Amino acid sequence: MKKLFAILSLVLFSSFAFSQKIAVVDSKYIMENIPEYNASQDQLDDLSVEWQKEIEAKFTEISKLYDNYKAEQVLLPEDMKQKKIAEIEKKEKDAKELQKKYFGKDGDLFKKRQELLKPIQDKVYNAINDIATQGNYQIVFDKSSDLMMLYVNSKIDISDDVLGKLGLTPGGQKKQ
Image (cartoon, rainbow, N blue to C red; front, side, top):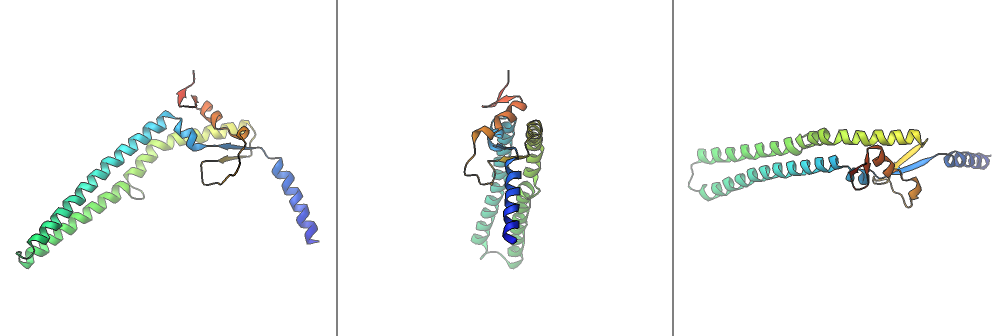
């Protein structure tokens, strides 16, 4: 009885699965062909480099202060040693807070990324949604994500359709 139920379930599932219309997109490919995305990504990279240099400069300053302290410590009275150590620790704490402010979980870089990239990602999602609705696709996979696909028939890849819906051609050119 259990075998019969398992076989029947398998047959029903198979017939349901084969009747579904499935498509694939490559979101990485789509994003790379959107000029605004590339410009935003370049802007984020430049900002990140600028902030990283600022933080590295602060840590270099802290390192120099610590080296100076080590060289002078034998000549300093105890209260001056404590004062210099407190100054170094405060600068180190400030540098770490700045690093967290820029690159932390909800830091400035994250917020800037949301500000610049989310509208583009939303446009792509809406284009995919429109194409999937018009094409009666029940499932659209993203082949650039962690989803492992061993084979994808290029006939079901609608990435170029998404670019077309966004008014672009492969290569990021605006449609004529």
